[in-house]
Length: 319
Image (cartoon, rainbow, N blue to C red; front, side, top):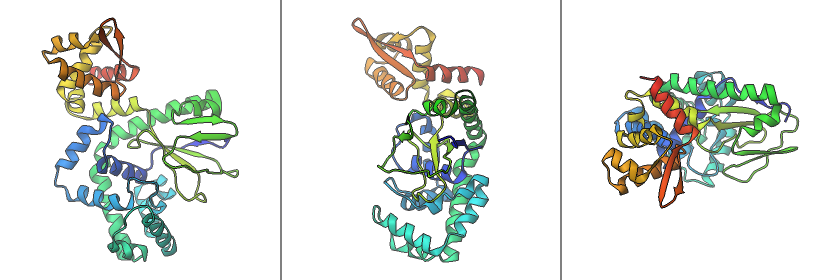
């Protein structure tokens, strides 16, 4: 593991795949809520075409084809799309055949499996347009959050070595000489002397992903720190925290932060809301990791977590 490296920045095609996951499937992270609702509410052809294509090629399941996320994309979106266009026909056929074993692949994708140039150009055109519609508008916030995540991990790597770096990954555990990773499927990846590349992703949530083919360069595409994503999403939206979370839920979070904590009854009185409504909002904030709740005598006391504090600090600095 001594050859473990940090990618310089996020990968645009992995962001395409992960953002499609966020749009196509239920997502418990409220940070993506307004972004997702605004995109799905539009009739934008590029968004609909991209989500439709990726719902087939990148389904919620144990496998999706590696040709969608070639390593060349680390040099930029266009380089990645060129690599997709150059995918050998035998590889397309093999990967789509493997996909069909775990997820339905409509017959119209047969032309893609045959590597017909016009079809490949159509696929890359859809992916390019989807990236421009879904990812590019938030490029500044994404780059800022990813850069901050990489900077923090780079400092840890320089000061504490690889073991210290692995300790910053909540989904990983270093048991020399094995890095145990919480993953969606049970698999072993043998590095055989190759280095492991850690690639940060803004739209990746909770667990990392990697290329399915063990012969490909070993990489883990991992979620960035949750606090950084919340901060960037809040700062990126007009109206800041209110636009991100909704005005009532944002008011609950602010009210919790105004003192050293507040009970459900105190919050309800402060916001002129019912106890039931307040309890629902605190449950969502707790699930998002923004507050913590514990019993204080007969009442339930809510206090901010470090993530909640960071989000409120971002709100204040954006004014």
